[in-house]
Structures are given as structure tokens and as C-alpha cells.
Image (cartoon, rainbow, N blue to C red; front, side):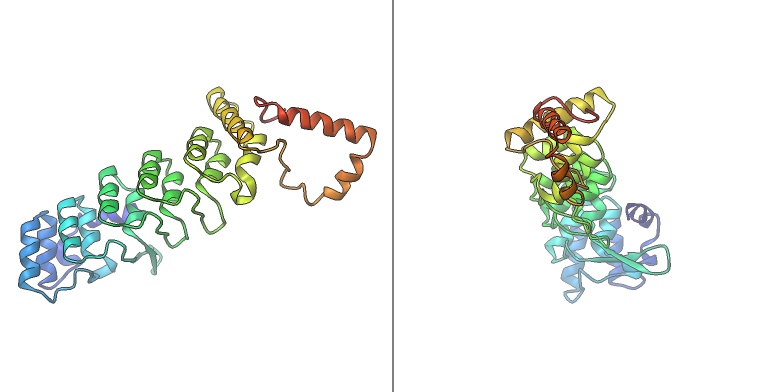
Length: 271
């Protein structure tokens, strides 16, 4: 979506807003002229600040695409809806729905994201893929934006369409430093089928610094009552067979060894 936003500012206002007074307003937005924006609304009280132009471009989106925060504030002061869904071309002849906050999460400037949040943008808005803004930031590897969203009320346990949380996603990507950060901020490790604990237990990262954070995550989970080893993803499928095997001397010895390894706070990965 951000690539679409990057092309809009290159076009003339008439490409999206072909007639006055919308065209006049678009020109004032391009100049980031808040005084003129106020004057246009006073002169045209019936002008809808949420009126979509061509290709679904709204006045707020037009201002955002120019990185004009003064114009954005002026528009919101005149009742522009910062949470209005945007129906933009998908490049395949159709449209897809998103919100300015989702675009800004992957956008070029932190201050644009902050400005939208301060103007009332919903930090939990989801795009066409049912992806909340927080996970947009995670998948963009932009942890500054992730923290900005959390500081402005984003749900730390918000999920995507598959039930994945930010913490579980980061654990699957071996970013245990950010997993630790989220856990300390209150992320629930039990969501997404306990993927955080399972990844912490089983991932073999191969990077000393990443492994150090992986161990710190395990220690934090142990302190919160997690009993390692946690069941693997196939544990339920073979539970009856395993339970029967663990009644044998070989199975009991294996279970004792596994439990002893799991209880060690610095053992993760291949061990």
C-alpha cells in the first residue's frame, strides 16, 4: 500500500479531484496551507471532507501522501474521518480496503504515524488481509513503529486472520529480543497455541546474540510458571502412543532426561 501512496503526490490535484471546490481544496492541501483550507470550508460549508476522489483517494490520504501534517490537522478539524476505510486500486483491476494507519505503519516517516494516532486513528485497525497495524509493523521489521503503536493503545495481543500475535510471529522469526520486550509489556504467551514457548524451546538460531535473548525469554517464561518442555506441535496426535511407551524402562528414562533438560533455564534449541 505504501508504494501506492508514494506515487500519488507526483500527480496533479486535478487527476484525483477534477472539479472545484474539491480541486481548490486539493491545491491548498498540496501547499500545506491550513489557513486556506479553513477558508475553503467556510466558503463551501456543504463540501464533504470525506468525499473520495478518483481511485479512492480522500483529502486526508492526499495530505498524507504529501507528508503534510498541518493539512491533515486542518482537515480533521473540519470533520475529516481519520478512520475512514480506503478502497484503493489493487493493481489487478479491482480494489482493496485499508486504512491510513495501516499505510503509515509501513510508511516513510515516524512522525506521520504519530500525527495520525494523535488525530484519533485507531491503532487496532485491520487491512484487507485482516492484519492489524501492529503486525504490519512487525512484518516490516519496524520495531520503532511497533512501539509507537503500543504507546498509543494498540492491542499487544491483537491477532491476524490466522490467530497469530506479534509475540508469536516474532518468535517464529527468531527475534527473541523483541519477544522479550513484548512479554515484559504484557503480551500473553499462551495465545496462538503457545507458539511463543514452543519456538523458545525448539528454535536453533545459530546466532550467539539471538540465542542469548532466546534464553532470556525462556527464563522469563519459567518465572511466569511455564513448565518446560512444552508439548510439541504433534504431541496430541501421538499422546496415547507416547504415554504407553513412557511406561517402559526406556520410555521413563527418556521422559526423565527430557524433563531435566527442559527445566534447565539455559537449555534451548537442539538440546
